[in-house]
Image (tube, one colour):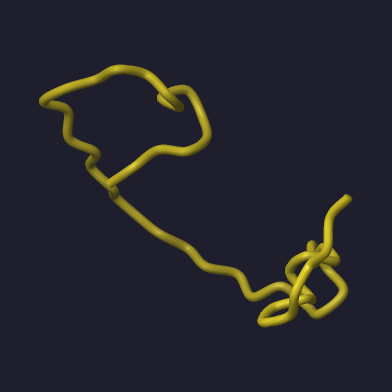
Length: 48
């Protein structure tokens, strides 16, 4: 398990376990929290 955000992000920790008590998933609508990059799934994105 990797932590890419939050208080443990990029911290050098060893021998640590994460205990997950509960998980909730909420489906976002098409317009909610959707960036242009996410809308371009499978398409080429050009950068300068």
